[in-house]
Structures are given as C-alpha cells and as structure tokens.
Length: 145
Image 1 (tube, one colour):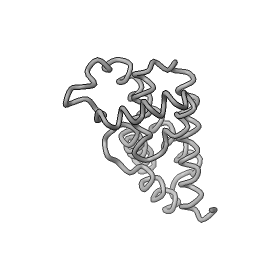
Image 2 (tube, rainbow, N blue to C red):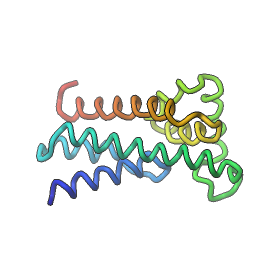
Image 3 (cartoon, one colour):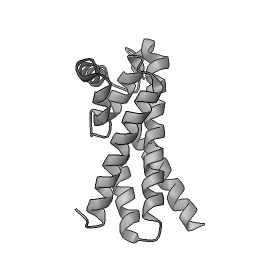
C-alpha cells in the first residue's frame, strides 16, 4: 500500500504542478528517487503522466474558457497569457517544447488551447517536453549527470 500512496501522491503533485496551482513535482520525484523504494521507471512514468494530464487540462481550459480571459478568476494572468501567446504566434506549436519550463510553460499550454492547437500535436510535443524534464531531474537526483 505505501507504494500505491507514493505513486498516487506523485501523480497528484505532478498534475497540480502542470496546472497553475503552485506545486513542486520535481522535488517530490527527486525525493522518491533518492529514497529508492519504488521503481525508477514507474516513478518517471507516473510523474510524466500526471504532468501531461495537467497540461491537457490547461489546453481544455484554454479552448473552453478563452472568452473569460479578462475575468479575475481566469487561471492565467493577462500578462502571462499575452507573453505565452506571443511565443506561440512566433514559434508555433514548437513552442510547446518549452511547456516544461518554469514560468512560461503552463501559460503556453493554455495559449495552445486558446489558439486552437489540435490536441494530438499538442499532446505529442508536451509529452516530449515533460518526459525530457523528468529525465533530467532523475539523472541529477540519481547522480548520473
């Protein structure tokens, strides 16, 4: 049961971290990796799936609630969304490779939804970015880098 709790907790933190809720999934993943009680591959998969799912939620929010972007409760500030849209307009879908970056990554996933990026290319690029980021975190945590 402790393994299930660790995986479920990691998924939840990674999901939240991909949305605009402040969470540190990298710290959670690194801690679990260093503890060495769970499978490295499963930890990477769970963190990646949670983070990708959170980004997919952002995309959906961008698609469905763009008309509310000027409301106070909208999940991305007007300034952050404008910056992300600028990146997105300049670099197109390839900017989603930065979806794992701090500060700009989460707004980029919302901007992709607002700007009507098709879901499958969105998913593929976000998955590359998120898995890549967690592979770097794992390499550092395990002393491989």
